[in-house]
Each structure stands twice: as structure tokens, then as C-alpha cells.
Length: 214
Image (cartoon, rainbow, N blue to C red):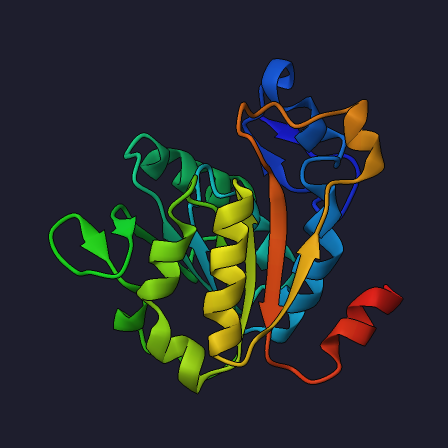
């Protein structure tokens, strides 16, 4: 058990192996999107975490919106108890729901679409599903069309990024690409994927000016 010591996640407790997650401990993990994530978290009463892994972003959301409701989606069952343990470490005992299915455009024993969920307020979506981001969007057309959704999507190829942008713009969403910081040349992400950067999407007028001001 360790406590994150810097950054927006400062004070959050998690089981962290410094040999693999030193950037998390010092607050540098995906720091490029932390300010935007926190801004969105404060606005949104619900958070959908597609590709939740050990629950890091769900914990970050609850830090800044303790009354908000979290839905964690993950395919690897080994994270079920890990997520529960991390919430318990941070004295969070309610307001979160776990789902261990693939998030996609269909619904069956192994897959689930986000359109199956009812929302009635602004909602934040973090999507990091190792190349299947476009399929997640296919399964949330109703949400995108009828509600104010705020999305942070990690894309892993240039073509996937273009496909997601085109899809979202068809639903009248503004998009913004968040590129890797220059210092990633020195302190790179430890992931063997061709591209790791973020796509932000939203409907709110003039939000781009507010983000840029930050």
C-alpha cells in the first residue's frame, strides 16, 4: 500500500509496485489529461470507466466528486478484488459498480453496450480499451445523441483516432487532441503500442476556450 505524493491524485492510496508504476507515485502517469479529467469530474454526476484496470481513474473521479456514481468496466477478472481493495483503502464503500464484460455495440453474455444504462445528467466517459474504442462508441449512440457526454479516449493508432473523431463529429461533438508532453522523450510511457495519446470530446459551447485557458 502506497500513497500518491504529487499531482491531481495526491493522497490516493493504492497497491503500487514502484518498479512498474513509479510515474503513478510521483503524479506523472498520464499527467497530460489530469487537469481536463478533474474539470470534467467536477461537472459530471456519473463516471463510466471503460478499461478500468485497477480503478485508478475511478478513484481520481471520487476524490473530486465524492457523491458521484462510478461504473467500472473491465474484462480481466483478476481486477475484481483489486478494485474493491483500492476503494476500501480510500474509505469508499458505496457509489461504485463493477462489470466484467467487453464494452461494445452488442449485448450478450460477454458484451455490454453503454446505451443499456440510463443517465439523467452530465456524464464523464474514460475509454481506454487497447484499440476497441470505436466499438465502445458504437454502443453509446443514444447517450451521445441525447445527453451531455464528456469523453476522454486514449487512441493507439492514427487511423483509430481519425475514425473516432469522425464518429463523434457526426453527433455534433467538438474534439480536441491532447498530445504527449515534450518530456515524454525522457520519461516515456512503459507501453509497447504505436501511439498513446488522448482525444477529448464534448458538446458544451466554448469549453475549448476554458480548457485552453487552463
